[in-house]
Length: 237
Length: 382
Image 1 (cartoon, each protein chain N blue to C red):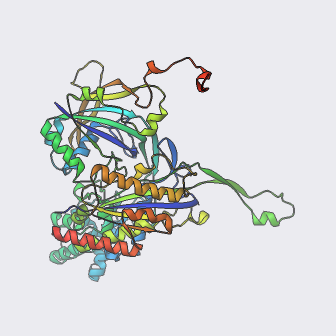
Image 2: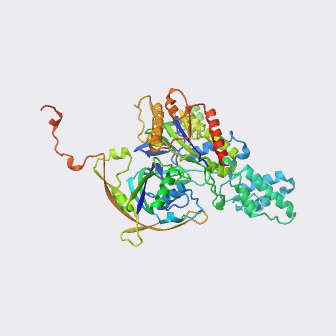
Image 3: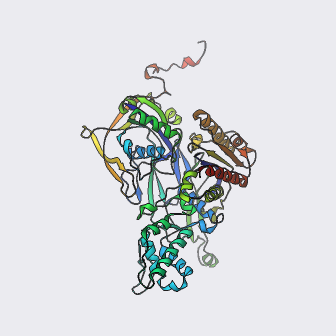
């Protein structure tokens, strides 16, 4: 099995799976339908085209930087300035960074990696006003999505890593699992079709977990001495 | 076919102002790099850009977003054949129904009063499209005589879809009823973020009641008191035009060129009008960088993830421009993503670092050069 590692970062991103009408929510981690949509856009697949092999991919997400949920208030008015239209409330994740492992066949993933460098449609993180920052693809790895999620180095922004004082961090993970796995949740996030006339999402089985990852900006715990000797600062003592 | 993407990066300072506020009246904000930034939403600047189009493009190519589509089409029907004036609303409703746009009489209609129907949702229809739908209705009426006119649904749908007006093609259109009228936007406008940390400030104001003031017996209190929130910021703004998608939406290379030119000019020089009379905050950008690419759009907002501080060399604006230039060059080198062409616009020596990415010109020259590049590359495609 091969895994394509993606790093999704940007000032704002939004991954909605359960929004209704004028309240557009976001989940706390990228949704499978959002990631598959991103990959399909990179390949040039239109919404009305069938998704085919992209549906075979397994997705695992690790939350490098959880970010904050922020709300945008949106109004709409006709260009002639007459009666205003319904107000909408859209939620975004600010300052968040996610690592996504896309598990599938090596050839397909190599093609996707190339598409991400030259996407046919411009890429965005959930909503069109959220372009990604930094290259989206981080390369191919061998193994399963779970293995990659366990071993990839911490990919949060430099300022977040510096601000973290502990030598190890616990990062949340959300990974696809077979239906019926103990401890799993069901989310309506399995894309079947993005066709505007016939949008369909199936049930996706996910398992939430935690992974411990080292913080490269802090020395290992064993090397830290808990004894403070002020005379260390004075030379020649 | 060479892919063409035009990235526009803008550094613009706004004085104390409240360009874009949320439902509580506070200026919009966002957190980035761990600090709160001022924000102007993507939709606010898209609207300001669209308003600016009015002066830049022939009105026949602009769209009107309205629910009163029956009225608009009926006016055109009457204009084309005065004899059909009495039946114009009925014909307009019929041709719109054939195009898949359902209209119903508005709720305010009193019994017996004939008000023109409205569609259930805001719809974009260009002046061109309204004219062509009206033509279809008029032709059908002439053929049918006094009988009920038969209007071909496929043709009506086609006329509502083809030759999309420029702003629909750029910003997209959503019609909830008939999905084959959906047009994917060709432009991506990011939320504008300040390059530095920002705290919102409050202006406490009082309003004097003249009559009360003139009256000897009344106290000296104000008629009204309140607060207005504001902030002042240097914004990084980013937009990207997917020229190939735009040409798909518009159909003609020449109109595509004019659309790209109008967008670049309008995006750079427009500003949302929030609280403009209170703060008189209309400014022009300190620096603009336009890059033409053939691989993917690239935002340089990462240059500002570490917020710019006030003590950086040269001041905030000079420092932002320097960071923008350095970040851009580093990205190009690190990921081998060099632009096809670049231009910069700026005021004073502060904008010099951008000349590493694009020669310094006036906005008019840049807009024209972008247009020529688009014509040249779209010409290769068709």
